[in-house]
Image 1 (tube, helix red, strand yellow):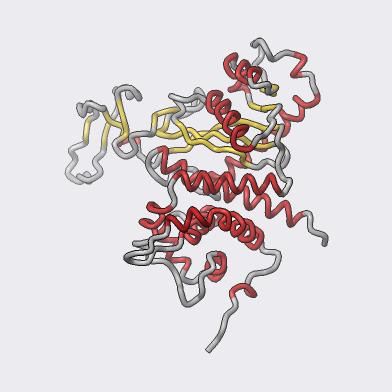
Image 2 (cartoon, rainbow, N blue to C red; image 1 turned 90 degrees about the vertical axis):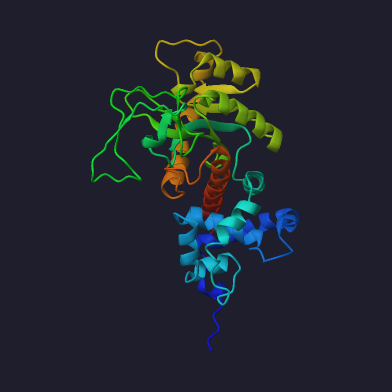
Amino acid sequence: MTIIDLNQRVPDDHPLRGIKERVDKILAKLSPLFDQLYAGEGRPSIPPEQLLKSRILIALYSVRSERLFCEQLAYNLLWLWFLDRELEEGSFDPTVFPHNYERVLSAEAAHLFFLEVYDLSRAEGWTSDQHFTADGTLVEAWASMKSFVRQNGKDGAKVAAAKDDDPGNPTVNFRGEQRRNDTHQSTTDPQSVLYRKAAGQASKLCFGAHVLMENRHGLCAAITVHNPIAQGEPEVALAQVDEHRQLHGAKLTTLGADKAYHQKKFVTGCRDREVSPHVACKERVQIEGLDGRTTGAQGYQASQRIRKRVEEIFGWMKTVGGLRKTRYRGIERNQAWVYFVAGAYNLLRMTRLALSRQPG
């Protein structure tokens, strides 16, 4: 008989150690909530703490599905150690795991976890309470353009009638038909919209994802999944500023942004909130409240240099975190998922910062 101590198998300087230590602190604070969620009757549920930790692992290790995660967990000693599971316990049942997740980890619980992660970063001194950056991106919906049909059911597209065509996935010809969000809707994900971020780009079914980044170490302070047509990025940015002040009591004195935010409504909104709009200016466009007194300041130049760091958040989330496309359908479910992805990014960022400051 061989006894394996999983804790001894993990190197002392492995980043997952620092992440586990921080997650355990957060779970200790959320324990009363999880006690209410854990089912005490019927078939034993997966502990909510392990479900939450599983989400962190899925984001950190780019696992594309819950079933694949359960398969790999059976032989991954590092993951078993992170979840506080014994080797004999093995993995989760792949048919039970997704259902437990849907029942236990709601969008509200995911948001609470993200807030606790950010509060921990503030307690450790990694974040700024004054200087921030706002920016948005598009996340492609997991729905094909073929699903974007007329809402009245009278679609004008021509379906190919070739004998060798797949009847379950027929070839559809949309040539000559104008498709618009007010007349068409995706049957796969009705909340996604046909949109493009800039001229010259292809329109795709997508959601907007907007980030508020603190400028000291580039941590994600807030993230919002939204309809990019109903809510523009400047509008979402101002709402995030208000929410961040309310939740964390931050002073928030400057807000950096690119030229897409060089709008009167956004600049005025910042001034009304006593926030200096460090916005990149469009040529030959003058907006009241943003002139040489702001753009000539040394702090403005620093904000314009640091604001580009927000692309690192988007890059990590889309490549490692799996947000190149949505994992679920609808805004609410995807909002819950991005909270875990953003929380995982912040945990990894804090751990690496702490390791870089250790002597030797």
